[in-house]
Length: 190
Length: 190
Image (cartoon, rainbow over all chains, first blue to last red; front, side, top):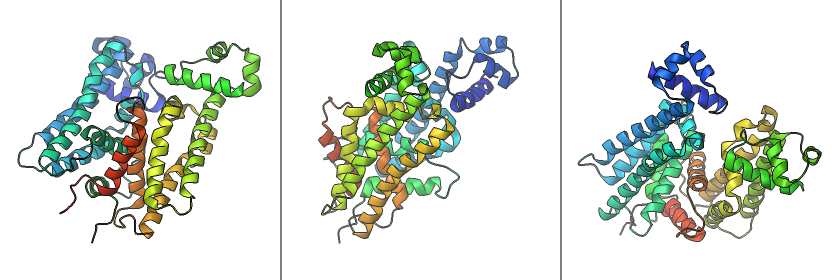
């Protein structure tokens, strides 16, 4: 039931917004009583926090599976990370919208708990770049922190425009982005 | 006075959010009467629309100055476009936050007027890429539309994390991003 209430809340927060959704709306959409709601959550902001936590912890788990894999090049790890985020759009587009848009409605207490997890996702990408530099798979003359923000920008922005059922598949988009990141837009020198 | 009301509203919408800000808050922050407010705006959503329009029209104007310049390579035009957006963060960070976060509070009528302008900004970047491909400055094997979304992702994401007064200057960040976009992260082949 907790999962069902969260799923419905993701839909409501994503479509109408956090402020525009009441606990009454949430219980009605689930056909349950307020008693059931308060059995699982302290208040509406608690639901928002659970949505944020679930979203980022799931991404971190999958990111770490990629980063800690053995016998895989850093270029391949970069590709797997990009593909993971792009594929996540189909699964979690509505959660992501709530994640990127509604964080300021979290309490300071919750924000303080969440921000380190958001930063860890970025730090992990930065570490991937740094290790790839040491392995001579990536250039060493670009700041790894700024490069990691560039990579995150490309992939995270996709949440705002990419249609997984459109004419470009998740793999095609990943190939274009990874080729752009690794080889750049200039024609190869001949 | 209209500009002053808009500036104050950008601050209020950016800090508190559109829904959390009342017309009463806006007139108090400006030390004017509601009569003055209604002389310039129909309602609160009208202010939001003017903020959105001013933001995107200013960016489009500067983008077109860059794109239509004569005797400038497409690589240089790409660099100027990136620098223009990065520099805009200092000038318009709060407007941008309102722009990216509060669009769903616009009426359908206003959204229909605004979306083509947002799309034009993307189409202009796409056109820059396409013309650069024809001039053999950029690779021809990557879809220009997807590449344009990648470029926009890198620069637009900066609004969410970049501190113009931090340790990386606007020019340095632009150099890193343009080098990443043009030359890629792989070490040059020797």
